[in-house]
Image (cartoon, rainbow, N blue to C red; front, side, top):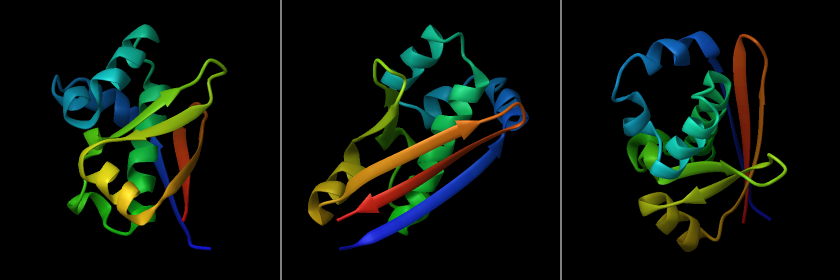
Length: 121
């Protein structure tokens, strides 16, 4: 069995400052994620959690963001609020070619958001 992991942590204030840049959301997040954020009043904690998953995923596959784009990794929530990943573009091709199964966990508090990604094969 093949297992790779990645983790990331970000300050919520960093995301609040980044949101002032009009291109931040469109540069890093998919249209589905942006719709989700808008439904939740652009909650910086949710945005930070999704951002962390993207970074943790890039670490877990071992390439960083050199091979994949942040927008190719969408993090959505099911009816119970559990996050799940939908991959597109090069990230999707990598997932299919390598047979990855992606598991994620996110958490946040007042100051920080964090995510862990575990990839099984």
